[in-house]
Length: 171
Image 1 (tube, rainbow, N blue to C red):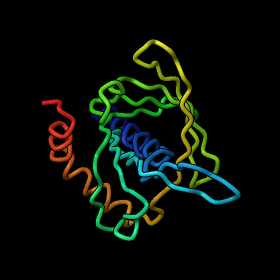
Image 2 (tube, one colour):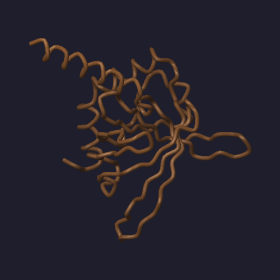
Image 3 (cartoon, rainbow, N blue to C red):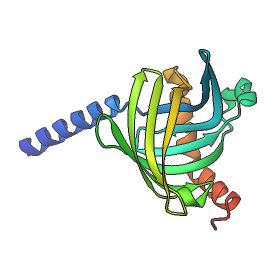
């Protein structure tokens, strides 16, 4: 009994430690362009939940003044796994473009605590391959706000998923 308790304690501490070290957990907004020191954000965003689910949302820059309402339009549902300190995978279960419902293997680097660079090789429908480069910035820095977003996405996951399936003709 004592060994089982010790094992469980070590397992829980190790799990907690990993969750804290996952650099992807958070709310990210895709950078569309960087020019002359100015950053232009695109509408694509991702919420990497601590439990390994990934929610892709669209929020256009003109909507940023209403960001706190979190009325995001979903475009991506996936599970993700950090596989090393520089790689992770996305297992995409629903995407607004069916051709992207696949497993993607990313290489990533945190350029600083608020900037994520990632790239992956994508095979197009015609068989050609291309490397896709993404630059993301942390869209939410406040831990309280981040937890509110996580809670909203988690609580509405199934509803968002069903809505997206209808919207993208996957019923």
